[in-house]
Image (tube, rainbow, N blue to C red):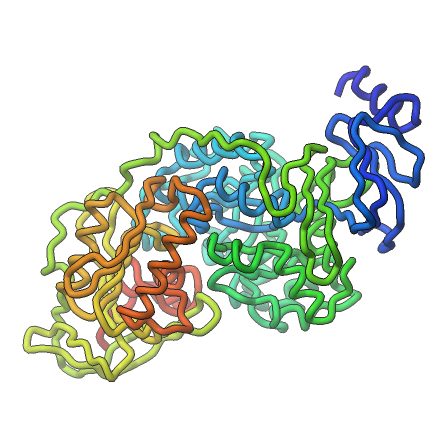
Length: 580
């Protein structure tokens, strides 16, 4: 800031000069004092310079007509790639819902394209009014037992970790690496500390001494908390809890019961992974705020979760409250119950009006992140089990409801004379496969999946957390092969097959992860794909058919998952055989 810029701010605040904008006749939600007051907010050069009642004049006057004005909402942890749309298009659909800043971890595209993927995301952020604060992906790949498109070590991080747009290290999923003081892991931690950057966490089921060891790395928060016991222990030991409400993971109703007046300043809100379908039908952070109030949280306290608490946790001291000198990121609300958003300002600019995003979108260049699906020597024979059949007992991935956790199930299934799996429509177990798609290694991991409900055909997607190889599930080898083959030819996306024919497909040209169409257009395509997944493939109605499948390869989430190298046990952090 120059001397003249500072002088102008002071002159406007003192009333010697007109503000750029004055929002009059509003009810100011003050998350600092916990009060609501009638008044006006004066804005100059993108900053809040005045608050009061009928004391400011402006070049522009906006009459709020008695509505509530609150700080812009902050999503404390999100993967843009999991929305299946580009950063520009995500901003277009969440800004009208009141979200003005997001803390984004681009480890999905980094697992596919490495540092060039991160550079694409940073560039794309310049094409939206949404304020995107990126993390440096900390775990690419998430574990040493995976085959990602890139490997990012501490030396690779050095180029960008000091960038002012990088807040620090993204969720540190390799908890065993920290707990066991792995040298390469410690190098990443120390690099972040060298640049005075913070480190976000990922610590499902960590308790006791293991949690203590993990927190010695000064991890600030966790969005993988699933129980009240976890919430209380992690808060008591210094962590923020990021309560997640996404498309597949629904933790808010459970965890909100553990929020008290004593601990509520340690609570943040996040979506983690949220599709356009969910956003356009139910909302974003505004939906989480509504749920908080429905579950007994005072509205101002709830708004703090999504503003002040998040800003302080991530050192975003220029936002998170309506205060003098802060960014003019503001949301005008009809009420503090449904949180219906009327208008949104970012940096003092009106960017959304009655649900419509106002700025023009000029998409970022995606040429550096196209053509990411590379598969060699894939054939139907690669999908066949060749088990000994000493017995029919096998380890099965069991889907748990309302989340991405799984249970390790022991089941008896049918095999043919060659030791290959035979699908039984009376038994909710299907074949699942993960095909390496980055380096043409030919690796194919095979397993069995329970709780998915599929009875016909197959589904294949090029999104599979976090290494993002191709993942497919189906009733027989022919159908799975047809789905994977169609996906390879499409160069990434989602494919449904029934009777050997493609019945629905969605291309994802950006790293095989994101579409280049609008959120509304993608929602229509997803609606159609979901409908056919349920009606024709008979995938269970209570299962989100795409996002649920994409998490069946994430080995850093309990209890059992499938990678291109085979079944992975979270508890032992090792590969395990299919046969028992």
